[in-house]
Image 1 (cartoon, rainbow, N blue to C red):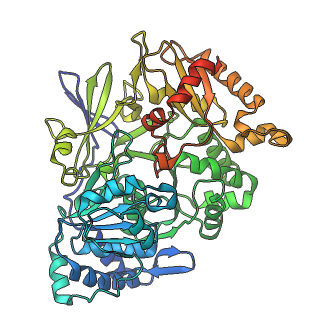
Image 2: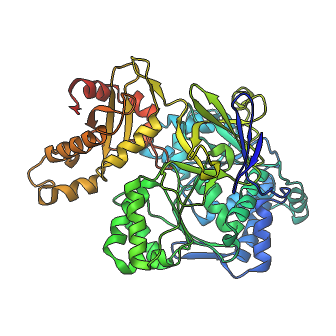
Length: 586
């Protein structure tokens, strides 16, 4: 049975499967990402495209340099089966190399430079990612470090600086134009790695059509993007789909100006972000929950900064994980106080395999875990599975598979060609699907207690964070095979210090998160939560505060800023034993 609602079309099958589509059809997907660069270079040649520190490059200058780099890359190889690997931070030179390679059909694998740092020794992850690719060239911000990290591997590709290709003699422009003409929607543009939260990282094929279809869908969902040129201050890494396919492509597709933020959501680097926001006043702002958590104190203490931030914003975008209700409430209250109107807080859901969007949340909701509704051209399939609905995706935005891994590719799709993303969902309002899909946990993260009771980890984690009143930055739910649930708490250092005041560390030798007053307050908050939590599947029996933050080098946190729950559980077996032996009982 097919039913048309206000903003979604729903088909219900007899076996309980549900299909959801946007009511507006997506036009035929055409063109490429490099085509969009050429468009803006021709129509707004002097408009700024990217700013990195003191360096700004216009669309026309970028396109001219892109062409020069393409002629040098083309001289190296026209073999689309062997990618270029880039190991570097976001920057103008990386963007130029990406678009140059895209334009002549050479795939680019983008790898986080953290994997080549001295702290990542013995560099097993970098070797695991790069080794199987058989690249034609490796370009890096720090080629010496990359060469050292890859030493001993049987890799014939040379390692050179990302910032200089003058050692390559350029190919003739006629031959380059021939290569450019061969680039179509099915051409492989990027290889982006999954975060590894459901297993080892996989190299995901990103075609031109995948990336273009996402931007075409956003033109329908958010028509205002085409009405004024976006200004963005953004740090999100291009080696992940959120930063590379959402943020960077929005700036390029809509002729915007992206300021490459050298800050990060850490206590030591957040002030760089604050300075960039103060200087450039973005019209679109993207971040992950911890980024907003660290930015908010600066905005709350400086009305002029907050007014400059919120006054011109078309939206505040959250991704990576659900925005805790306490953080969302602070954003809403602050925007209302300094501008007299509420903030437009939006979000999206998808994965590396969907480049990145499958759904967009572009309507008001009180549900922090609401994923929104399908974007035009994308069908969401909800399949009954053990009392929940598993989410699957089909559309032009979905990857054709994993790089040279046919077995993994086959496992990723069902018999109808829908991608199995690994998330579960439910309707926010069973009577009105247009109210959105609510995230109902990762299929692989959920578990059962020894009593046979099923635990929805995603839902419980969000409730626990919300109950912590800012003291809980993030949390991991554990208890598989046990009779009760435990919680590993990653505390918010700033909130802990605010609560302790003068007592923060004057006479306390341990981390502030382990201070007796912090433990006492967490216990009070979690006991209050338990009074209305319901049964054993949602009630937290005990908790323990982790000794330190999640470790990115142990793959406990992804570059996108959210927890890899499975990795933390595997890495912190002894902490979990302590939790159930001597953790704070509730």
